[in-house]
Amino acid sequence: QVQLVESGGGLVQAGGSLRLSCAASGRSFSHYVMGWFRQAPGKEREFIVAVSWNGGRTSYAASVKGRFAISRDNAKNTLYLQMNSLKSEDTAVYFCAADTAYSGNSYLPTVIHEYDYWGQGTQVTVSS
Image (cartoon, rainbow, N blue to C red; front, top):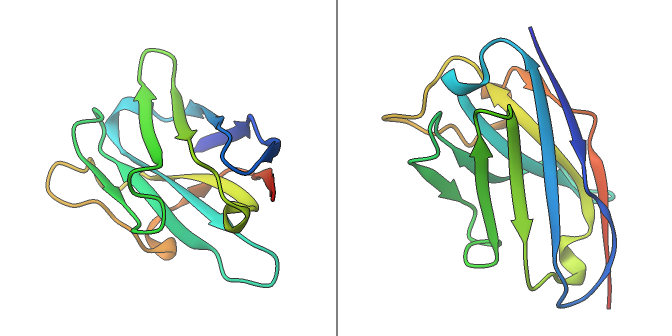
């Protein structure tokens, strides 16, 4: 079992920055892939970024590449998402997720159903 709790969401002006955190507990955090997803009102949940067990490999969606950065601190069992140059279209509920089936050494999953544990989400609102 893995428990995930996101924090750090809020209201920010366009062009601003936020850093989201995801605290993990349960199964050894340093063994598996972690990812961030988001869901805007009226839209499907979408993949943003995934990171391998040691942070050595990442995969970003085109919509956030160059603006967002994922990182993880395995000693603190925490995943981060640094979001810069925020746009109104980044407004969504942001979820962290764990895929305990993969380490990420050779494959980084980007599909929702491949992730087996999810946090409750944190709201990010970007005002224009």
